[in-house]
Image (cartoon, rainbow, N blue to C red):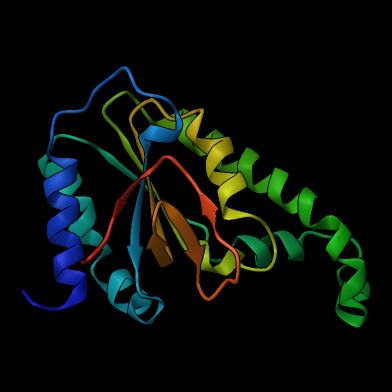
Length: 180
């Protein structure tokens, strides 16, 4: 069990099985599973093991894969052909995409969660360059009754999160689970 993903799974299993405090802030309900971007396919191949760790700890898991969120949103746009011809016109619509994504995820979350649930987000790396993952997590965390687990391809140092190879990161009160 020496590979990074196995270590990450072991740390996650240990953390998710600890009894949950009910008196915590929305930000503290977020758990970032931080992994090397090179391990994306390995994480995806073993995502069922993370779900199983939740289930074994009596926390039903709602996995929301947002990998195709942007292309699906883009396909619904009336002016998609114009955006492909001149992508600069699309930048002003990123906020609309963010709002639509949060609304869609919120609906799914509110239909399926309870105070023992884990809502897991997969595919955050696909948002890079389009919307702020931190903004999306803050918007969703306030709606979470149980825990929000964010599978995060990036880095965590000194309470600062960096998605992929971003130059800037952000501070957040979430619990970070790493392979280290």
